[in-house]
Length: 85
Image (cartoon, rainbow, N blue to C red; front, side, top):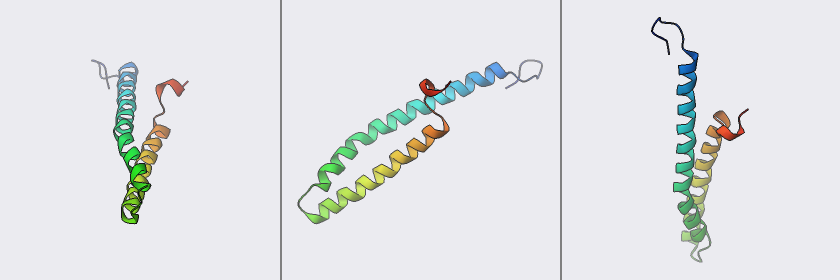
């Protein structure tokens, strides 16, 4: 970002970065919240007596675990605001 004279505006750039980091944090939280019911149901399916259903539950669970790991990777790139100095 630049000011009216074309000079870099570090305060404006930092403000934009702060807003972006906050949005990433909210998105990460919202996605985890959306995945939680699916993880619970995958656990239910994994305990099913029919092998085919149990395998499907396991497959769903593994996919969800990978999705949560991807979210964790974004947290490593953009840590929550409360953990930054």
